[in-house]
Picture 1 (cartoon, helix red, strand yellow):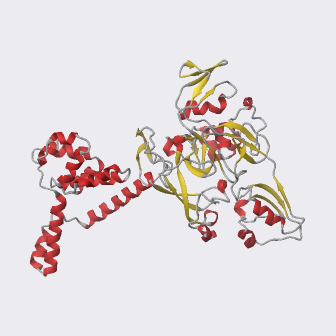
Picture 2 (cartoon, helix red, strand yellow; picture 1 turned 30 degrees about the vertical axis):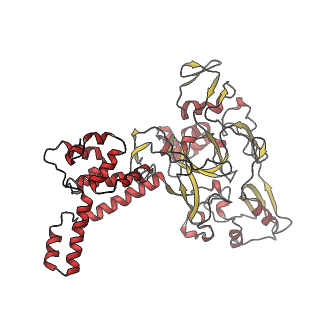
Length: 522
């Protein structure tokens, strides 16, 4: 509709590729410039720039016209095409360049009169306020798209990966390595994930929304490597000042209601329902991928029957007893990577030991260093008790009544297009996968299982799944507590630590030795 006004055959606007080549000519770009539109993410910026230049070629130079071209180009083009008095005035880019050159020539020649005249009559001149507004909008726009599609910064808030990734580590995470996940939630505040700072309200609208789509990946999520994902059970959450609790967590663990703030939310049904890409972000180590069989035997993970290589700084809970004649300075403990944040029952105290006793999360090196202080130093592994109602799949019928954090499984990780038999005994493993992650209607009637109204004795999975665990194995809320991580929840690959504060607080100091350290190597 718009091309004929610029003397271009309307049919060329209907031919993919040709339409963009003609568009480039109309604004004063070389036809080859249209090739940039083939590059994901970059093409968004190129398209917006071309849209602005096209409306300017119709002499629409105001801030409102520019904003409309960026926000919704079809509306701007339709307005120009259907208005009788709007005319194509020529390619804007060479005209703007020529006018700028005339100003520079007058300035170079010292022609004050002509320079003043050109500057006063400059149709492309922008006010200071507009310059600043456009610069700020572009900066936010660019940062939002980089954050959404390429790289996002995160900070580690909890000690679940302690030893490898510590509280206070600031990470850059690549969203391209595992395939760029296209936005699903499209109406949201820029540069904010799921809550508005200080207000505590959600920062997005649930509709309109787009279906899940992921661009081709550079590499696959690999067992043994950390990855960032949306918390799978975080679709319905109670949000307190301290953290988010999944509704399913609270249901299976009534002890959590000892938190008065949480108890009040539960009483008033004050939970928030979130879409996939607005669930909280988690970082764990992927220890098993689609189609793998996993089992933990005496703290060691076995993948398909073979022991999985452990991270160098894998941590567990220990009881530590120092004899009366042994003391150790906090400075030396800090050099060993042991501080008050490693306390199992950390309640704000900065003392690592109390009356010679410590309840600590330690790696093997730290255990040996503590033992080297004195032959009478005792470092005793803490026993983990079975608790089937706190461990996935929260049902003793599957034979998991004796499972613990250290002895768990076996469990099979679902794989796309793989089919498994379904029985009442193994259904607890796949109930949430079938009903929630893959959006089916699941019912159990007597001894029979029905999926979407049809009796089923098997199920074929629609997507891949992963098993995630923290390196601080006794202080990590991970797949052992909430199950599988669906592929559509995968966010990206951590690259490196760009800044690090001790225990997440600048007042405690900066971990200079961790800055620019790889986030994937031990």
